Amino acid sequence: MFMKKKDKPIKKNSSREITVLGQGIKVSALKAQRVIDQIRGRSYEETLMILELMPYRASYPILKLVYSAAANANHNLGLNEATLFIANAQVNKSIIIKRQKPRAQGRSYMIKRPTCNIKIVLKE
Image 1 (cartoon, one colour):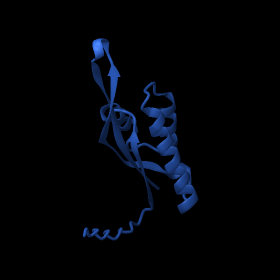
Image 2: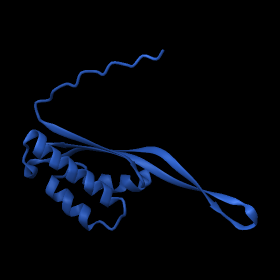
Image 3: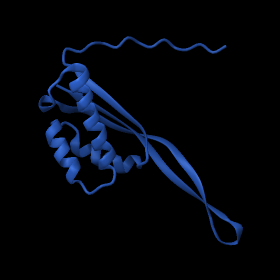
Image 4: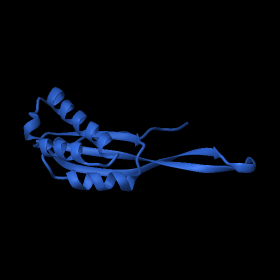
């Protein structure tokens, strides 16, 4: 019989924050990291402008995460979006999706599609 660990109680901070986690995003962790490094510590409105103008493919899922986090902060905590900023943003490697591509003479090659997990924390 397996026993589950009890969750630790979450400490309440004086400044209110909202956390959003995107799992299994089909972008390499290194490619997502270069986009995350540009937005860390910036305000919400400045982050939206930067992400919309960046030419990288990884910026679109990150834009959706930031937009979702701000909507959650507005709806659940009643925070104003103009006062939010990116307090913490991190990228972690996730699973590698493996596929096989048929090649000549009955052989097959492995196609590896890396994925990543992105965590963004917005504070007031």
